[in-house]
Amino acid sequence: MKDNNKICVLGTGYVGLVSGVCFAEMGNLVTCIDRHKDKVEMMRKGKSPIFEPGLSELMKKNIKKERLFFETSLKKGMKGATMVFICVGTPPKKNGEADLSHVKKAAQQIAKNLQKYTQIVIKSTVPVGTSAMTERLIRRHCKAEFDVLFCPEFLREGSAVGDFLKPDRVVIGATDKKIARDLVQVFKELKAPIFVTNRSSSELIKYASNCFLANKISLINEIANVCEYTEADVEEVAHGVGLDKRIGPHFLKAGIGYGGSCFPKDVHALNQYAGAKGYDFKLLKAVIKVNQQQRDNFVKKIEKRLGNLKDKRIAVLGLAFKGNTDDIRESAAIEIIKALTKKGAKIQTYDPEAINRAKEVLDGQVRYFRNPYSAIRNCDLLAITTEWPEFKKLSWRKIKTLLKNPIILDGKNMLDGVKLRKMGFDYQGVGTSNGTK
Ligand code: UGA
Image 1 (cartoon, rainbow, N blue to C red):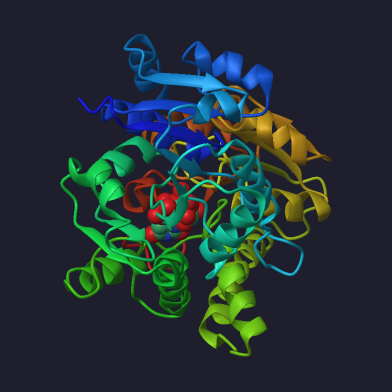
Image 2: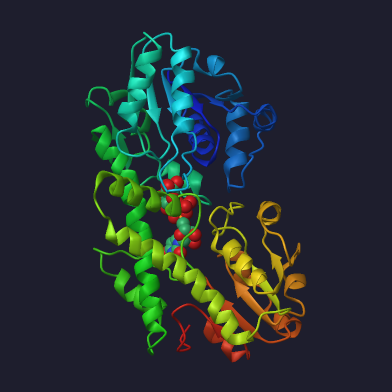
């Protein structure tokens, strides 16, 4: 038990809340700060404002053990804290650049409340140079001693708790290895490799990691597109390629492209950052283009099957940007629905968690259903746009009787195409046109 570590976490989005809860689970005393009173009240009861498997349970457990607290006042949260984590959003500006206004505001607020030596750790994804800029900003506003470190977060939505507690690695950026010692101590029990480097490198490691993964997805999507001209099946190709340890089996799933609050934003941000420095990052531009193309191609495939989409009824299963989350930011599903309704199609949709959020951004001819079968009834085509595990378990016999035409376009290559074709469905995945999937 490390009750001596008093940690304050500023911001309770995915990164902040999961980090705060997991730090408490690791035995630290944690206070999470959010400026919204209602949200704080809700979290104090152990209710998570986001859908994330396992998070509420851990919140309740650590609140009960009196290791996890929620406050609106940063002053209260920082009282006695040896570390303050900045976990605020860095959304994209119109030109793709990361908007650092929340980080700057957090720095100013922290400066106002600094009494004694404190380590300020940035966890938000920020461009190279932001830790140094934050240090200068705080220095301008206060006299107390402090250090600014950077510690990128690599958790994925939908498996955030497991990713935090069992990371592949922990990266810490500090001006000096000695300064990183306390933070190394905090993460030591996770038994993961801890890499301490300078702040600029650590800041770039975060962007480079997300860009690398996005690149992997765009590459396999292009291979999938080539597969469609051949007898090859991208699922088989990805498996064979992924057996090479130098490549690995992960993030080789072809489909309608990556979405979410991270990959699209971070790929754009690094491309913009490089451009502003005078370097043309050609590969990232191609990654972005291919990702958009996958979404457009999916809509074209639907048009190819149904012809003019005016008044065609299309069932879309999945609204979230991926399975096991209610997050719809940059979701391919949402963009595809927008494109289809623009062409006059009527959408019937179901998602286990994301309907309420989708309602805020979609308008036009979209009807929402609380059950997948009702959404599918009387439709001309069924499109799968999110990899929710429950979609695998649907009764396809029943669906065959509900659909007007037995056409399935699987944008996530998640269904058993061989079985569905045997059942008489006209099934098509992405890059799996020859029928082996
Ligand atoms: C991503 C990274 O995986 C995390 O390591 C990182 O911490 C996080 O961004 C972040 O920067 O905060 P996340 O966006 O939650 O995590 O979700 P992913 O599982 O990476 O999926 C992103 C998108 O790529 C989803 O739309 C998913 O459907 C798509 N994807 C993923 C594919 O199309 N193919 C794949 O093989 C894998």
